[in-house]
Length: 276
Image (tube, rainbow, N blue to C red; front, side, top):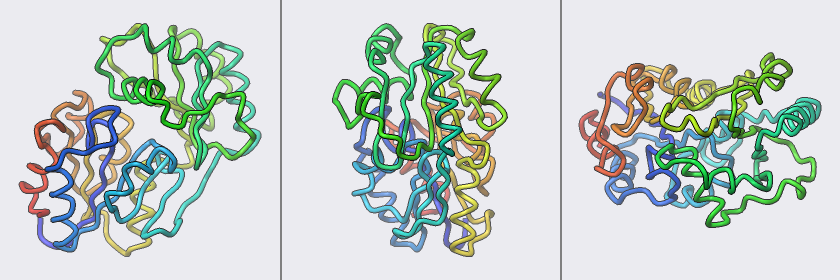
């Protein structure tokens, strides 16, 4: 892959093992080598900026955060699209009414319903999104009680419930403005989890915003992901890569599949694609 590239990395299950903030040493070395070669490396994640903080210290060139709702390039904000107050109010009320557990993500803080940790304790291991939240709650990584939510702009709401029927009314009221991006993992049928993504943006529009700011064509982009919330990113980039630990549906969408995150998958793929 000749020429300088823009590289976009999901975090949980891609850059780091699920629920962790520490990338493998091989991944960090590959990222630094890629940057020294003239490539730029961006995070592309559902996490908000607050939950990105532990990873940003490794020295990235920007971030597509909040699933595309907040995008930075070299420390400058190039896209910023929180929910409107009315959208936030409607979503929060209908989800609460149907006993759907909510985690509301503002730019710089995250608020979670009480009782979510009890729900997660009854689910099985393995789903990267569930594992991230289980660890975040267990280690108290800054998720504040929902009662502390102060009306600040919200970019995304993560949802979890036990029955699909609980989402019937939320879908009816919210699907015109929000995509219900649900995890399709059959072995976790005891817990339904996903996130509400504003139809105004996606990880794919975030990739495009970065390209437009830097004047780089989409053909010169590479994206790495592991779950279906990376679908818009892998569809947008010039070359898409799914981690070996990723879901089958995303592997089918990608140009190539690399090794798992734990088995130096990123470093191996960077080498294979001549990024380092």
